[in-house]
Image (cartoon, rainbow, N blue to C red; front, side):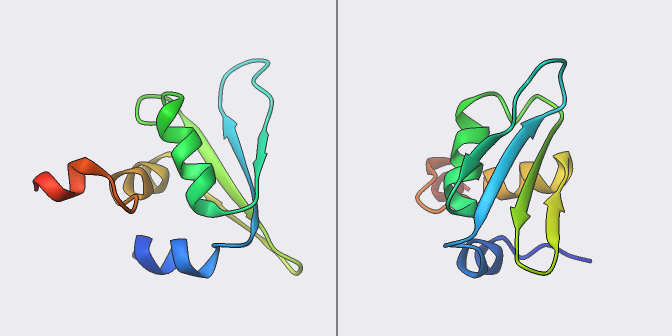
Length: 85
């Protein structure tokens, strides 16, 4: 299933999310939007680390693993990299 980052940021703009780096003793960090979670991931090495962002919804959780997290990082609104391409 293809990821549409703009739709994901819109759909989960007010959803509780957690960021988990796949390293020993790394605690999960909680956020109140997908964009905030992705910005945290980007600012803390999420481009180079194994990582997962989970969107916590009432009926199910949606997990974005490393490759999809990298796509979300690349598509962050207002990201300079996007404007240079």
